Image 1 (cartoon, rainbow, N blue to C red):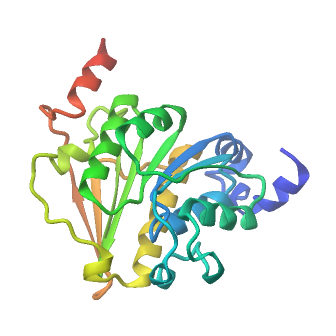
Image 2 (image 1 turned 90 degrees about the vertical axis):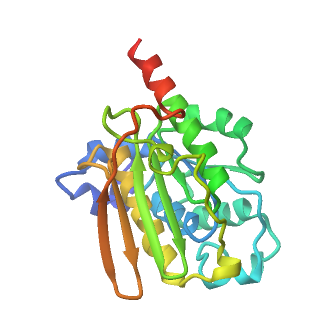
Length: 255
């Protein structure tokens, strides 16, 4: 590690639970962030500032003026740009040492099958149920830890789904793909700006813990936050032994 890097990351290195070894792990790691909006913005900026060596971004959308109320990585002069390009500019301004790969396209099964096997952690910062299921499927298939976040109106949630852990559920164990959900969005329901910052920052925290080997992750738990009353609730989640999504891949791992 170079002297300038030791200085840049000194406040993390000073942590007993992190140290130089943890920083080297983070600097050699690769994170995939799907969604470069309200959640992806703070998550990406914190991962970049912490020195994650390689960050891949996936988002098919472009920066709109309505995004600027909460999507803090974007700026007025980048309205109209692809969000992955705008976020890459923001990352480079914070830490030019971070390698960034951008995919300005929808996160479909083919792209996820290409990207997920190459990374160390996946952050789901999307806002629709179908894409969440596709991301979870890929993470289960390739045994990658998934840090999931969601925020709408005044409520948010964060969880870790890590099928490498025997008792950890996957996203589909908790939210079955056959279950019917009414799709809602910030465009129709609204969202408190700092809420996405809270949840996105927590996603970055969980990802950094996984990458550095520090502490224990949130796997097996779902944390829910109500910003109106500033209340947190934590719910234990269980693996579905008959889950049609993760069960086949866990059986393959055993054999």
